[in-house]
Amino acid sequence: MKYRMLGRTGVSVSRYCLGTMMFGLMGNRDHDECVRIMHKALDSGINFVDTADAYSGGECEEIVGKALAGRRDDIILATKVFHPMGADRNMKGNSRRWITRALDDSLRRLNTDYIDLYQLHRFDETVDIEESMGALDDAVRAGKIRTIGHSMWPAERIVEAHWTADRMGYNRFRCEQASYSILKRRIERSVLPTCDRYGMGVITYSPLAGSWLSGRYRTVGDVPESSRLNLMAKRWGLELDTPANRARLEAVLALQDLADEAGIPLAHMATAWAMEHPQITSVIIGPRTMEQLDDLLECADLRLDPALLDAIDAIAAPGTDVVEEDPSVDPPSLLARNRRSYR
Image 1 (cartoon, rainbow, N blue to C red):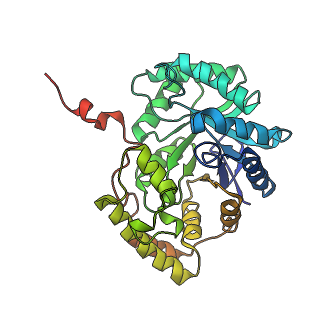
Image 2: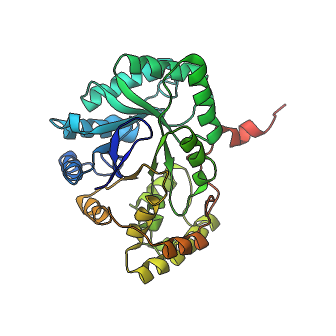
């Protein structure tokens, strides 16, 4: 396992970060197996673990807390806040009120006194950024958080946050977590250069593009009902058989041909590709089973040669998404109610 500094924090993290979203109700409901998966990852050299309060309604954090018993000091632990955690309308977002409560809830579920990297899961358009950053700064000074970060923030919000930190004397955000895969390269255009400008680490998730790049699908009909693709489509009220997904599949088949020519599984090529960018600190892998973890560990040190990288660029152009749509990360400003004046 290779390691890299998390921005300018001085903290060294593994190039693989263990993502735990598939632990619990959203994936593997066997807590003991999830703990074994996590221990196997740690034994393999992974020292970076990412979770979130909203994953399986807090169950995921509880599983991670069990797995950390006796090993906490060896782990760089990251979690997140923003998504709803109950019926109460204030149990969500980036308000000082909710951040303060949600952080204590995460510490309890994770059975730890501190979190190494606490991240705002999305930007909250309803809250002044000073409000959120002030709450995070207080938590850092109280010793509950070591480092703060955010996830899926556009470049202009990252700049605004650094300006706010300088003006208010707050701790700066040190890390961005972004979706990044061969099929989704938009962050290369402005987010990655902005993070580099401010000395931030970047951790990325979904290197297999939600399993499109797993190597298992050649038609939309190949996608089983229990797959992550189907689960996420249902979550966002989408259908799999759409023009957008057929365009994704066309790119996937071309990428599969490249992987076959190189003699490596498509999933390995896609995961290794995500680590080739010099501004990517760590790539989150999210195994649901031990077999999936073992498979991903096989390509931890895989490097792709320049000719293969050039061929991938010809299929999926740098700085672009194969399909420019993702309702899970689009800002609220794109919603119809925020684009039209109703009189």
